[in-house]
Each structure stands twice: as C-alpha cells, then as structure tokens.
Amino acid sequence: MADQMKIRATLQNDVADVKVLMFHPMETGLRKDPSSGDIIPLHFIKKVFATHNGKTVLDAQWSQAVSKNPFLNFRVRGAKAGDKIAVGWEDNKGEKASIETTLG
Amino acid sequence: MTIEAMKPQPLSITGSRRRTVLGLLAALAAFPLRVLAAEWNKPAFEAHAIPDALKAIGATSIAESDKIELKAPEIAENGAIVPVEITSRIPGTEAVYIIAEKNPQPLVAEFDFAGATDPFISTRIKMGETARVRVIVRAGGKFYATAREVKVTIGGCGG
Amino acid sequence: MRKPASRPRSAELIWRRFRLVVAAILAAATCSAVAAPEDDRTAFIRHYQERFPGVPLDNYVDGALMLSTDAKSQFDSIMEFPPFQSDLDKGRALWETPFANGRTYAGCFADGGRNVAGDYPRFDAASGKVVTFEMALNDCRRRNGEKVFAYGDRATMGVLTAHARSLSDGMRMNIKVEGSDALAKYELGKRFYFTRIGQFNFACSSCHYAHAGQILRTEIISPSTGQATHWPVFRAGDNLNTLHLRIRRCMEQVRAAPFPAGSEELNNLEYFLAYLSNGLPLRASVYRK
Image 1 (cartoon, chains in turn green, blue, red):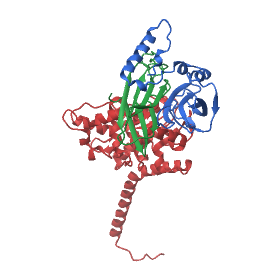
Image 2: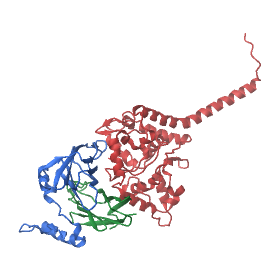
Image 3: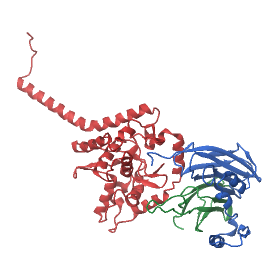
C-alpha cells in the first residue's frame, strides 16, 4: 500500500542489509487527545515478518513500546542480486501492510 | 502449518476474543501461512512485572553474557525514540528480546531469526524513565542476557 | 619663531583638507555599515570558541549536539532513516505540484530553487523590509495566483519548507547587510536578541550567549552561532517546527506573549541570527529531541 512503509536494502557481497521505516502511530493507549481530553486508544504493530525469496527470515512480536513510525534494520546472508526481500506487519486492529524490494 | 490459534479457548468467547480469532483467521488467509510462525505472546507483553514477562517467554534460567553487544545511548535525547542496536555473538542465536525494565510493561519486543539472518537488530524504542535496557538472547534453548542503563530526562526548555 | 616650510597656497590646502575630511567621513560611514554585523559575527564566534575549544566551527550547526557525542550519535542513527520521512515526501509533493496556471515553485527561483535558502533573509529595498525564504515562497504563490500559506501552519508552509529548504543543503549561509536601511533592520533584530522580555525577564542572550553549553532544565543550551542553519526541525522525530515557531515557543517559555510567525519582529531577528551563521552549511529537516 502506498506510503505505509519504506524499504532500503543494500547488498554487500552476499549480505543484504535491510532498513525499513513503517508509518504507524504506535499509540500506547496512555496519551490524551489535547483537544478532547479523551484517551487515544491503543494502536500498535504487534507482528512483523520478513522474507527472502518468500522464505521467512525474521519473525518479530512487538509491544506498543516500539517507537512511533518504527524503524527496523536486519541483515540476511546468502543474498544475491535479483533476490526479493519483503517485510510486512499486522497491528492490533488487524490492519496490515507489506512492502517488497529487489536486491540490486 | 503452525497455527497456535488452535490453543484451547475459554468456553465463552468474548467479543474481542472472537474478533481476534476471526481477525487472525482473516490475516492467515491474506498472508502466506508459513510466515505466521507464532501468535503474539500476550502474557509476556502484558506482564507488568519483569519476572512474569521472563516466565512467559520461557526464560527461567538466564546467564549473564559478555557476548551480546548492546548499543544504546547513555542519556536518551528523547525517551520516545531511543535507538537500540543488538548484535549477538553467541553461537546458535535463535531470538533476541528487548526489555525496558521500568516501562509499565517491560517486554518491548521479540525478534526470532530464521534462515541465514544475522543475529543483529537495530530499532528504536520508547522508555518511560531512566532504566536498564536488558537484552535477552535465546540460543540452543538457553537464555543469556546483558544490560545497560539508559538515562531518560524530561525535557525542560526542550518542551 | 618657527619658520614654516614651503607650503601650497592656502586655498589649495583648505580644499585638500576638505577632501580628506569628506573621504574620512565617507570611509567611516561605509565601514560602519558593513563592519558592525561582521564585528558581531566574529565576536560571537570568539566568545563561543573560548568556551568550547577544539569544536570545529562547522559543527555549530548541530547546536547542543556538538557538545555531546552520545547525543550526536543518536541524531546520526535517527537521521539514517528519519521517522518524519512521510512529511518530507508531502513537502516534495507540494513543491513539485504545479500551480493552477501550470507554473511551479522551481520557476520562481534561480537554479530551480537549489542553493538559494542561504541567501535569505535578504533586505528588499523596494519594500524596505526583510524578506525571509518563507516570504519568497509565498511571493511565488501570490504571483502565480495562489493563496498564500500561513507562516505558522505546519501542514502547509512547514511541510513545504521541509523539502524546499533541503534543496539548499550544504550551501553556506550568505546573508548580506548592505546599506543603512538594511543595517537598521539588522540592528532591530540584534536589539531584540539582547532585550529582556517576559515574566522571567530573559533575553535570548541571557541563555544562548551568556550560558551556551551549560545545562538548563536538563537541556544543553545551544550557541546562537549555527542556530539559523538547520530548519525546520522535527522534534521527537515527528513534531515539525520552523525557526519562527521555535522562537515563539522560546518566547512563551520566558512567559512573553510571542510575536506571530512571519511578523516583522521575527523576520528582523532571523536576519540577525542568520547573519551570525554566515559561512556555516545549511541542512534542513533534521531531528531534534
């Protein structure tokens, strides 16, 4: 989906260094809306996965204590140009997003 | 197919539980099944006390290790966005857990490595106050840990 | 009795003296028009360099971060992939989308808007006022039949400058104060900087000149040299602040009623502050705590 995530993957020898930025409020459920005074409900990414040519390489579970607009950097070995790296997330409301890139 | 949603449910399923189950099933339909390896560890993430969180991730016995590199600031510029970088030099590292000891719910994240992924993670976390950031590594079914204190100030004029 | 040496006729002598005196006055007038801002800029630098020996001048653009490797490394880590990337994309979209008449912002500036921000603020002789980069952007909108943006509005002017200013990243600040009218505006800005305001009765100089590098309410006070180079900032990674919005906040923090963003008072202050940073490299859209 447009503008829900950004991914930058660089290849050095056979190691793909993958950096992802996810656009998500990661609300803790502790903040109050400044105008209404109401609590802003808990809304955060719970699960993150990453795949390399469709195979899972990273599987993460998060709490609302991961920062807003989360950043993630991981490295996959055995990678080569043309390989596909995908990263996706699912949040506590069941919303999902994913992004894919091809290693250059 | 490792769907842990098939764990026994309480007899009366409340609305939100039902939505969670249905949501999970819908998500499974959308995602390739094999990538959803584990259900979100609710008791671990919702634990308020560190021992409860550790128990929920199965870390009953933890050895301090100097083979876990933890890079975190000495004084966090802003407790909402604390960069944390972890490299585990313990052979056979399977997973890394991040705990912010004084957060209302100390367990912040769990990362499970599969395939040929380096036991390396860099991310940014929220810290409510000055506390130790504890990183736990699971390798060969055993648990190892290291920690460092990160000071968190409340900005004055920075407000 | 002294016998005078042979001398020119008295009329010639008077004329020569007259010319010398006029030349001296003109020289003094010209020198003082240019020298005063330069004197200020170098005096500020000397003052700070005494307090912070060994800090390269270019590092002053990092403000308080220049005094803490711990803080600077967090900044570098976050700037690797800034959480406010989506605001930068919105700013880019605003900049690149043509006006209703088909023209673009790039057409209003030399070199498509690249390396221009460091020339602002500038003194506009025609209007007799200081013109900021934001005003130039609004001029561009106005000339092309578009409604102007409010200077204090983050979602429009803020986000637009997050991109527009970044086109001048690396450019060295290049403010000119030429002529007595320009100097008068510069002096107004300078006077504001040194004037105590608010219930706390603090001037900008009270903290940023006298106590730069010291800690106030857990924060390191930044020196004014370098302050004007790095806007807008994204506080806590997501709260966009232009220079004027930040100055307003500073005014509120000393319990003074703040001047509006885009007001002449803040424009003149920015003129002074930007001059202090002449020669330092600009970098837009940076993280701050």
